[in-house]
Length: 291
Image (cartoon, rainbow, N blue to C red):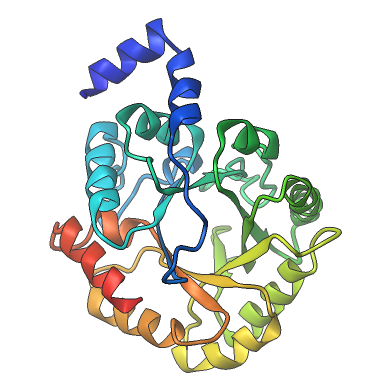
């Protein structure tokens, strides 16, 4: 199905999205292997389109969808994390059958904006995820002790954790301690101390943590991860992020952290969808092998 076909369906039969969601075969969050590999594609809605040296690598929707469909077709890939527009396209393409579908919830902190850390929930709501029969949600929690907007995000995140728990839907919280550099750009602190503190903050959100998962980065020094992950008993997945040109080094960092008892898998986006050598299937298969 071409982008023109998708547009035609959207224009003439918008109800087709909900119909596709209703007939989608579902699965458990954790399959028999007990490990997760989720491909992430929620970057565009934040205006973050760049990969490596190409500032608009993710701007071509047809190309992005082809990469996502290829990744989702590979053995061992459990599902996808994305915003509504991308997930609606994938629903219409039939690419989400039997996959874990995770909606991205707060995308209001646009990349480069003065309000970037006042990260409003402009994506999926808990009721949307429930209505569409999706399997989980994800929220980003960047906390800057010098930015009052972080308190708004914290409060909204806590209420979202509550709303997801009421629906018995898992919510993956991605926490960072962040501060602006000399140019005003937010930088995530990946020191062991900062990641430890961010995990402690995220774990305590809401009236229950029963349905809360963590989505955490590997620390600057991967050897610190064992100590850092002792901060919480919540199940966790590793965040991939933009790894640059040194893909092998990133795989090695993930390999060690994946052995830790609370780590249940990987959520990786650009590193798998836009690998330096262009081999999406190869990058995905290598990540599957780490699990």
